[in-house]
Length: 383
Image (tube, rainbow, N blue to C red; front, top):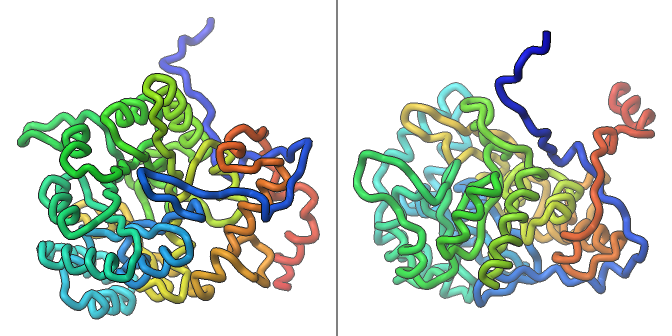
């Protein structure tokens, strides 16, 4: 007797399960165009530094701008809660594993100071850098106008999961269409992993969407809540929503894959899945200039009752410029991300990031292990 099924499940794929198929035509990597544009701003590399306290302070934002990318400053973090955030960051870095979560809960209980928002934004603007800031939905109505008045160029509204419709018994929630009309600067919203939610968010008038729930190295949402979709499938579904919305309106909403990328291969696969840019967290935390000094912690680590992040030791690899552009002496793909992007585009015959959206990918669970017997033996032998 056939057993009726309660529901059907679809297969979803992460970076380690797929491979990019090289093109029939190849081009020189230095001829590729990897520009990323949102609103009136164009960046020479399609890489954003995640809005996390261990990664972005005003100095890091300025440096990232000069290197051609964009760093997002977290307005809900220590930079806007404390006059001397470096002292607070030192406490977090020095805390033991047993005490760090309770310490973070105490640190992030300090109220946000509105005057510090203006000071941080203006420090970035005085250096001639594009200033992008991040707020959680609950604080957006209060903090977004302050950041805009101070000179912020791009607003990111970010939470673990973001939808266009939120059901609550509390006061009237955040309406993204009204927010876009109020701030009149590019608005990026995240995070999202499905076609339907992405399309509905795009229809509110936003300019960009962040893709990813729980893939980050310092995020434990998947362990705590069991929620998330592997990044290749999530990016492809949100990119499909972008194409649908573009056909409807002629407006192109950028798709930014956020989290889960450790190597150049992961980043390249994100672009092949449909991303216009990537947001990196733990990779950026490994830069010498990152304020976390080699440590990295999740944005939800400080939740007062249900933390969904953890502090990890990412280590310090070297200067940010080397991580992005090389030269590198490591062979594992964890440095020179821009070089990896350009070289992958070259072997795929992709002149632009949009051309990368058209390259073929295959399901290939053995892509990292096929033919690598001696590499695995080397690891087992400690050499």
